[in-house]
Image 1 (tube, rainbow, N blue to C red):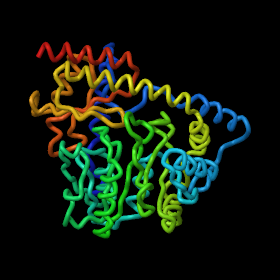
Image 2 (cartoon, helix red, strand yellow):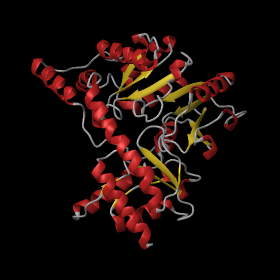
Image 3 (cartoon, rainbow, N blue to C red):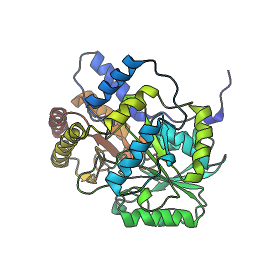
Length: 380
């Protein structure tokens, strides 16, 4: 049977790494997972309890396409609590995870063949979703001196229809401060392009609060999710904030593309937003793990790293150790039993000399993994 050219997207390499790790585990090996960006904790207990009560009360069916009004209002309230932003709940759109948000945003904003800038290194699925929608991703190679974040000079004169940024970023964990965010927004708008801010790691910050694009402009798309800070990866529920005059457009697309985000997940998400004590306990783990990584990775021999402002990743330049990060990651997995992600996922041009280390799992796993990495590097 024939297939479309649009379907010829690249694999998500981290998923292939996870599969290789799973096969070793099935064979009896104990693997330390530093490859996947998934919290080691589950959803807050209040989320599961709320869902149980709802299921006992009656069947769960479709919600309206924009999401449960109570959840949209609670998210809008959070923007006031976190950022002092007065947000109209009608601008909030509930999505099937941030991935659903990307699909909706790219479909609503761009026409076939248009060019969308994305920072490199960056989350690989931006690139692949754009390609699947017959759009042109334009990698913007970022520099270490800019902490791997794009700056206006990176896309001046490029004739972009849009710019996608992430702060805190995957894979680096670096953030844009308010002046940097403002500069990007103004440069994008000056070109008549759309601005999309991926804020999925907001809440997971260490020394300063992340800046939302909504503190600077209403003329942007903001995409977020319950997967990271709220520890609800498998529930597949996220949200968008869009300009007021785009809400109906998003509603029509969402009605046809998804009908709605999962009702059960929306109920759980609403309860999770008030589980602050439990969520801060998770943050205590990330803070401890980050400190261990920033000390232990250089001791093991991974010295070229950008200390993360947020998220739960460390991105390392390993050009002094290898020119083939995929083979290097496989060697680390097979020899040390530590699963890490080659940078090719995040930067096709330069990722052959980088690795991403995730520290989202338990502190004991991080201690064990760093010990294994140190022993591996000493034996090379």
